[in-house]
Image (cartoon, rainbow, N blue to C red; front, side):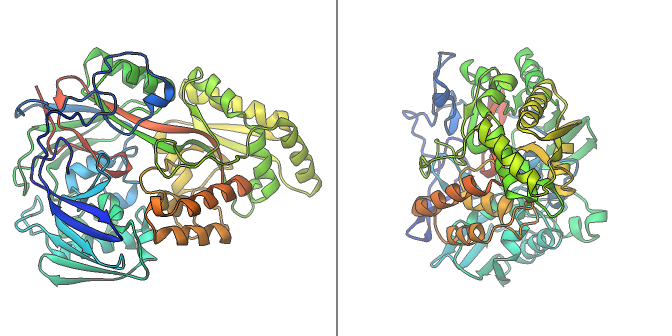
Length: 543
């Protein structure tokens, strides 16, 4: 069944026995059941484990009768800097919320029911996880009036792959053929079974761009989509404004506009939220997140594995190319001390790459902090001619600065020499990690959540263009290939083997589990979530 905001009689897609079974399933209307992990907590004290749960929290099952009008003021986690989905990582952390509002997605991942619910699509079917048949909704159009049809979908996904959008390695390496069956039907044929292929249609590649948007290529890109909102204006580093799309195929959005702004530090975001000047924020800094959760605000909580990490660039010519150097860096970092210095002890320190919030998690022996081992490995690496002078890239807000100084001290105590390079904001750090790969060490996140295959394939598969550290390991590639054919709960042994190999080969230093919390004011309703922490505003309204 769909969750509380599914008011358009959308069709749920349930994954069972390797096939996608479609069941016509409208909003349950079950007002006796809260779809909340901590509904009614009202500011009571929670343990840290109780904070990092999955799903909507403190949201009443019955949110009342929607009202039309108004502007939703959203302080987004980070600025996309482009509405071309190939120019950013289309996740909720890097502008994916605005992109999903403009373009919509073919499918939505229902975090509550662990199913896929069609949006622009009407259905998606497969019998073997190799051939998927996508049926589009009749009458759906782009905001310029052109029809959303099979050719448009194929053209949009083709543009996404040609221009190396996020997940391109997964798509281009797996899609054997895309062909129109008729005007509203697309058939995808894959090179081999891919159990979680529908997840690809819930974000980047599933954001369908109008033919007019891409006809001039990336240099002349125009943001035209079929989503519930349309582009109105953009002032870089200031604000992005979207206006309601009155020609949206489904129920018309309630909001007149959405205005996105950006505040760098999570503490400053939360302070703005507390004044009531903004409606929705997205935060991940553990101390601020936990404070907001304990305050009892309604919102959506998304825990992730490997939510805080220090990527080690292992490309040729970088110090991290040497395995002993990577192992020494890992052993030198006391992740509990790191959280003490950056978050006053908040957060869930862990070297395990998965979050306890997901049922595929298993407890394994991890490569933990060991100062003596770090010094020994550094001495051995130096004796073998390894470079031990490195640059650390982090952000310049107070917590990040404290973290950078802490990391520098721990690594230099082990025998490394570290230069700090603190950048302006999240967007610049993302560019250094994923676009230019210009770093030796860099603070980041992997955020392994509902589809571990997608996260692992993107971030550590040797051929992935979004592999920030250039990590390449044939044994790891083989395990990730094996993971592709299974649902996470069918692949616990494979996931555990990946975790153990990670502890030996150290693609990054795992600091902690993490999470995103998106609280909203009590007068805001109807916000939903999809994959990659993307917020959906189709049904959002404000009193």
